[in-house]
Image (tube, rainbow, N blue to C red; front, side):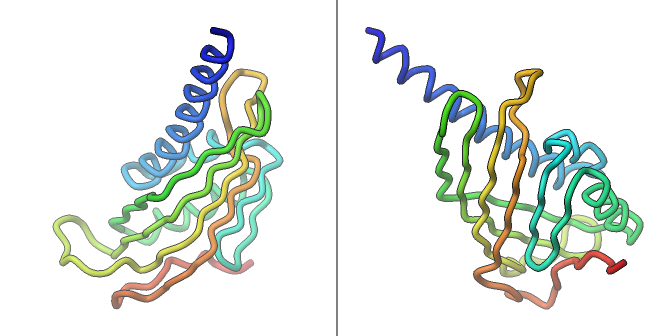
Amino acid sequence: MERSNQLSNEIVEKYIVQERLVDYWWLIDQTDAMQAADFYTEDCVYQMLSHRWEGHEPILDYYKFRNARGARLIRHLMSNVRVTLHGPDVATVKAALSVYAADGVPVLPAAAPIMVADEECEFVKCQDGVWRMRKHVITAMFKGGSNEQLLEPPTK
């Protein structure tokens, strides 16, 4: 019975971690993303393609930049999701990430994704019991399936 409880707890924790990443992309796609930092630890590293951000401020700066440009419709779709627990407070999520995006408001013409990427996230369970990303890496496998371009952050 103890093994069964342990397995049940592991399944629940994996689900919670996976849903945390799903909730993150939902926030990014459906809002102005100004709460994105809530999904990261203070000392996080976010590597998106060739851009590396450390801490909350540069992540929020990116979304401020995105919002200031005007209307942009975007969807991040995860598939082949794998969650691995490395202990009671550390987990890794690996997934395929397809990104559809274009400037404008719905309904826009359908097109191929602008990127298909490998996504890897290291989550830690923080003191408040919430799982947050300590490391988030997006590595492009395919780019440019439409006339739309990836939204590159400004260089400082």
